Length: 331
Image (cartoon, rainbow, N blue to C red; front, side, top):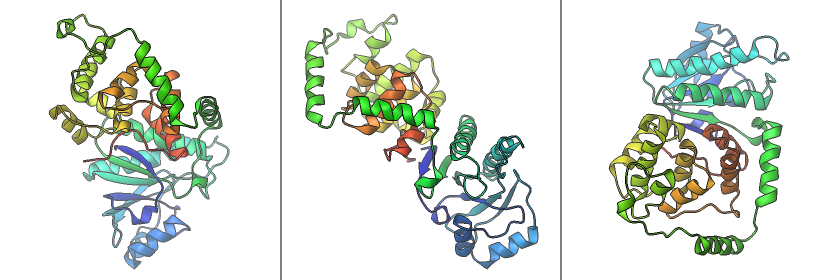
């Protein structure tokens, strides 16, 4: 997917570039910095000693040397000094500068750590929000695979208000067994007034969104493409909002019988800002449904019911709960 949050050792990733959060003198630090220096070899240290300095918010590009990645983009994040010393602008500059550098060198993938959220003391929830917002803004205009790499849970933190709201929603709605949910779904289906079979005579220009969704003879791909037209959105706008790669969307468009994963369907539900009923109908096109016995489903339902359709925000929460992210892996 264009933006994915992962829990890995950034020094061992196979990407075109990794970002090294360093200090102004470009010296080896602790943790992931130490691992990058060790795996890259002595040539990296010699090169950085030659360069000598990098200002906060700036970037320096070097080879990846012996790393799996071709390049290392070194950047110096701001030290947290209470938030009144231009820290947020400097942190944005780190992400934006690295992304612009990758674009300039025609790189297709880049991996970031959560810059300044460790020894430099930047509040983790604010550091995460700046990272997501800056990367999201870039991806709306450009095609690139971006990974936000979190080494452990302690380095990652949602805003307290969002976490508490989602947690309360899960507590209120979670069902321990699937049996009760399945029974409720059957009763709901049996009691609905709309027949699942619809004549093609109804397929006219004045049809409503519900009419489009209920054309059960159509495949998922056909239904999705009609929904995009109904919403007045472009293909590019849709797949970017869904955190789907251009290549993946092209496959959906050209293969009528394409079978998506559940989280890919949910990604399009969010991108198209479908309500809960519309989302369930689109899910049924692909043979899925939302379940109150699934933590991931409940998280997505929380955002849909509250009309919060930022897929990156949803994925932040899904990652916190160790659930699959919305979108799709690159093809």
